[in-house]
Structure formats: structure tokens, C-alpha cells
Image (cartoon, rainbow, N blue to C red; front, side, top):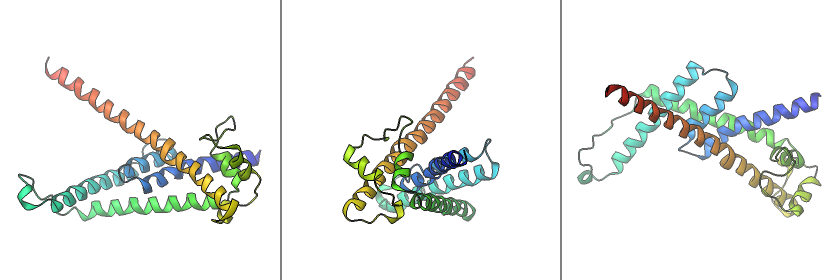
Length: 206
């Protein structure tokens, strides 16, 4: 029973830290992915974490506008105004988020390195035992017949192929499945905001 509990804990943390890994590889989803990661730890939104993420989002948007403004030739700026420098307090929150991304991505990679190839295949499989992406039998057999840990697999020969296959599966877990979860939640939030806006407009016309 302890082994089963350990497997559940491992899967939970690999999935949860996976949002940080998604954030590290997707500039657009950084804040949303980290928000999703913290939501899995907390039953209710933590006001401190919420504030830091909101401030980081403001800083990120401000820096993007500043970069775009500075990169635009003066004669093509039109009525655009220089956004100016971003508040240092907001930048600090953004740096805090970047630090958290690195921390939890590192934790996930450390966990994966200590898992055997078959354990990682099991993690990246559906409840029916099939891999999350259709995988050739020869590849599954190679993964299942090695007892080496992921961190021990080299880059050459069958070990290298096994390692790359496991990375391919995990990349899909991160950038296919977890990415879709974050995108879906963002879309639902935007649609909820649209509904709220329409309701307010409807009330104002009465």
C-alpha cells in the first residue's frame, strides 16, 4: 500500500511541477501556468501568491510594451507614448516568479532522473496501460527491458534511443496535455468575462 501511495505522490508532483516546466518553455503561458501549478497545491487562492502573480503579469506586459516601443522607429510611433520604466516592485515579483519556475522545473527533472525507464513509461501512459502517444512495440520493449534510471541513460545506442523516446512522451505530456489544460482554463476565463460584460451592457440599456 505504501508503494501505491508513493506512486500517486510521484505522479502528482510530476504533473504539478510540469506546469513550471511548461512555463519555462512558453513565454506566453508563464504566469497562467504557474497559477495553475499553485492552484493544485491550494484549495483556495492564496492572496500572497495571487498578488505576486498579478504583479508579475503587469511587469511582463509593461516590459513587452516598452520593448515594442523602443524597437519601433521614431517616425512610425504615431501617437504611441513611451510606457516608461516599470515599477521596481513589480519587476521583483516577476523575478520571483522566474525563480519559482527554475526551482520547480529543477525539482521535476531531479525526480525524473531518479526514475527507471519503465517507471517513466508508466507515468506517461493512460489508465489502460497504453502510452499517451501511440508508441511502436519495439520502442516500448526497449524501454521495458532496461532497469536503468533515466539519469543513467547515455546518448548513444539503445540507451540513447530509449532516453529520446521517453523525452518525446514527456514533451507531449507537458506541451500537449498540460498546455491544453492551461489554454482551456484561460479560454473559459475570457468567455466568463465576455458573459459578464454582456450582462452589464444589458443592464445599462434597461
